[in-house]
Length: 295
Image (cartoon, rainbow, N blue to C red; front, top):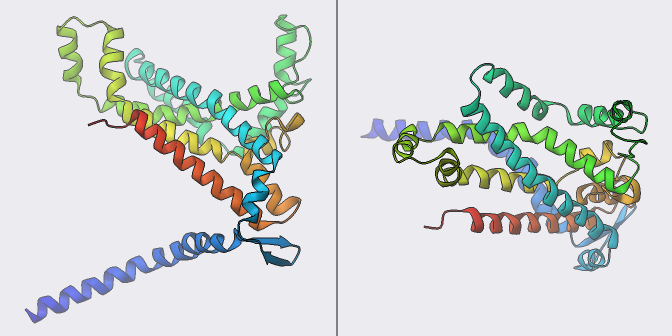
């Protein structure tokens, strides 16, 4: 019994020894920033000095029209891009899983590659292609599709469309992989039983495939919504920091400017970050309520 007890204590110490580095890193890079943000949110920074303002940062935020404009851009992009991307990812997954036999692996790789492409690289590439005298405008002009160049990056409307196109191009293949995994985990016997009952392919998709993919749809919707609320790289690089009339200015980009570019006010930036986290949490709860298990 004594040997077993000593061995158990040895294993316990060894276990703590292995997890200690992870705990230290978690404390330094996760726990400490969270706790320090609770302090920062009550402060107002002026250069090298700061003062206590209580809820003053939130009062200032409520009156900041630029912040609400940026947050509205986030919601507009989320409404336009997230449903489009999820639907395209689902369609591509169904086609690759059932409709294509040859070259399936190559097509999966091609659709997934944008997700592992550098954010900076692909943003710069899109910016070059979509300039007024860029390749896309020149191609459309030569084909007679348009009579004059489209201001993809110079017009507020087209700048928003450009953001939707770029985000959809990058993240559709990423979400497609999850749908493929979900499709391949559906028991084939379910489809065989539906075929025996005479169900059409459309009925099978809407009555069997789609309901069984609800967890994957929920995962894609929640993660995509959260990602859209944190959007920073694309508007900063692709539309040169917010685009014309700040049409693509996002909340994350505005927070960055407040913290590191214009005012260096970390307290105000922290307060806005808390609001973004709260909104992301509320949206996730709503999506889980709508798409989650109702049992």
